[in-house]
Image (cartoon, rainbow, N blue to C red):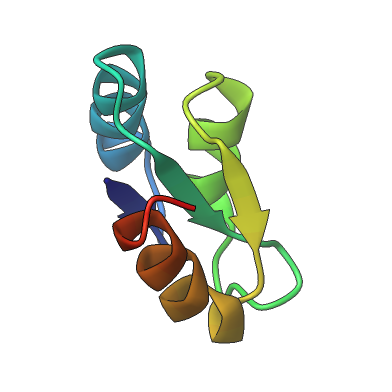
Length: 69
């Protein structure tokens, strides 16, 4: 599983895309709750994100993925 949150650049976005292509479940923080939306935006643009959620819902996504959704 991969989670990408607020930040700048695209290095994490590239890594997230590689994880997604390898079969990992991936989550990105949404724009509304990000201080800087650069990194999540790039991950989304590269197609490496399964779910886009607000910051306060990321833990729920992690737990749901752990339980097999």
